[in-house]
Image (cartoon, rainbow, N blue to C red):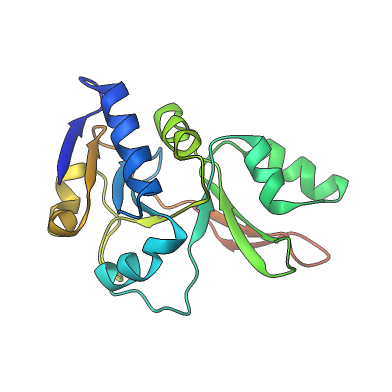
Amino acid sequence: MKFFELSKDRESALQAASEAVRSGELVIFPTETVYGLFFSEKARDKAYRLKGRDLSKPCAYHVGSFESVYALAGTLDGEKKAMLEKKLPGPCTFLVCGGAGEKIGIRYPDHPEACAFLKGAGIPVFGTSANRSGQTSPRSAGETRELWDDVAVVVDGGTVSGRASEVIDLTGPEPKIIRTR
């Protein structure tokens, strides 16, 4: 496992995290809400086993730009698009209909380094809180320590809020709040 302090070695941290995700490895990285466990589709099973997460429970895509949001979300009507653009980037996950008509989650964090990492990966990246399922979401890199043996990169960005993102479902006729902050 490679450990980086974001404040001391930003560029190396971003490069290592992006390369690890592209290579099918797991990465722990901070967002403005909690520390996340990030992974590509090929590392999905590894991430779920590590967390003890139910395979039927999906994880949201995490993106670093509106271009990536729209590439995943496709066409949204004016009201839904306006809501999305008002709340993103920020501590909100939107559920939308993906390209194949399936419901997907999209999160665009308000954290410049997380966005740089996600853009640098150059592939779709999934994320979930960097903890065992059912445990408290981590506010610091140290609170993710029990996962370190199974991840390639840990990036310490200091203490974050610890409050999970709001979740809003845009797949129905009206937006529906699933989880509040």
